[in-house]
Length: 342
Ligand code: F6P
Image (cartoon, rainbow, N blue to C red; front, top):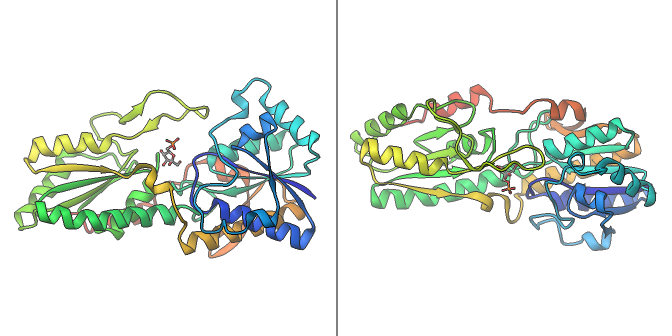
């Protein structure tokens, strides 16, 4: 078969491992031919292709980013976008398309499926907020990067008797913050799933410091919201999927804590460091399994399905299920985290 492959949305460590697995198994087991599309859906709109053969995918397993490039282009926000995508597919004789992405990329895949495009989805996002799969590749790597940073923050916080706030990504879900906060021994974790009361945060810090602990690490998700205020955003501009750019809650929090407690409080915003560099071994294996399962799904004609991880097995779920609702942090996990506050 002639199969198209694209990576869309924010990149995540492990994308190259998926591409490598698709191409390797597709060529070896099925005699497939692959065409990569550059920069997500933009490549299909503009007809920009990148040759994809096994030889060209050697050595990319440990590499972060994506050899295909990515973008947040939404064909349904571009004039004649869907028609242009379909024209590219038919001009190149593409018989199946594998879309590797998060809720936005897979949401487009679902709409195109409705128009008759034979598409299979692969879940990707460091945010881990995609339904249908227990975990997405890239998430574990982002958490590990955050934990490494938090471990370093502990020692300098202790030397200076400081409150150090670590702002992490995750958009409207607190998966990275919760996992990194638990693994990094944070004194408090703030997530979008629970609006926070700044007085309660300060009280916990004051009590903790009364016990002779003068240093504290707070992990805050970029999407966390104070009870009394609205979400802090970096820019009011919306991307093509209607998302604002989040960020800046760490600074707001630091100012409030400084004013209310007098504690020397500083902020570290991890930002895109969480998305860069080499994937962990777990993410490489998960991404590889997803890639193999995606090309198998193509050959089973399982269009409209997304490969997913459930009970340690790779399964298929309808794309509609994956993009229907955001997967937010399980309250049970938040309760585990709360035991260690203070
Ligand atoms: O969805 C992944 C993510 O890294 C979010 O955690 C974050 O809010 C967003 O992408 C940042 O997007 P950009 O790279 O476009 O600034």
